Image (cartoon, rainbow, N blue to C red; front, side, top):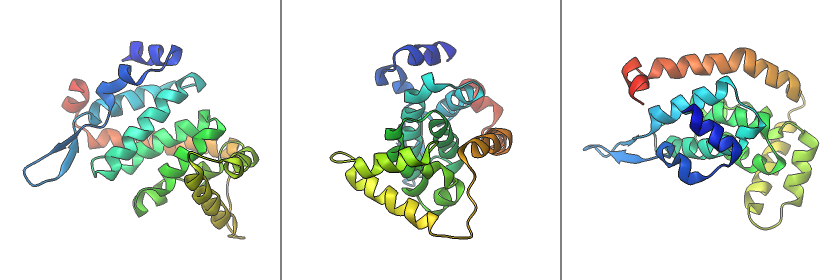
Length: 194
């Protein structure tokens, strides 16, 4: 797994991580499960322990897979949020579109779980400028993201943390709690065999 992470840091290719992609399986009752969920969670956990900007593309890919799994009902909001935070922490302006999807394209559980600061980006002014400048591909999502940011900023009594304080809070408190919750969701055999 560490070799995969190192390879992705040097040159990210989707084909190298296809075994971690969302893979829908349906049981006899029609419920969806994700054949790669436990394995992907182990990778996410391994990356979270020591991630850097070099992991940004891999993190973005994993976030997309977690969103697919979440929408299919086979992932927890916690794993989506952990990926969203890592992308936030390593983000480029263009990642704001995916972070918007992580916050607001799921159901209420996901909307409540993912902190609003994720929408604002590490550099809020740069994020706003990027979203305002977005022309073709992604323009619809950019408009929705701008509308959401305006909505959240309209609350005069709301207190949002500055990016550095939010990152510190997440790394010291929220992240460890998410990891603990996710570990409790898998039995040790699943994790060892994933």
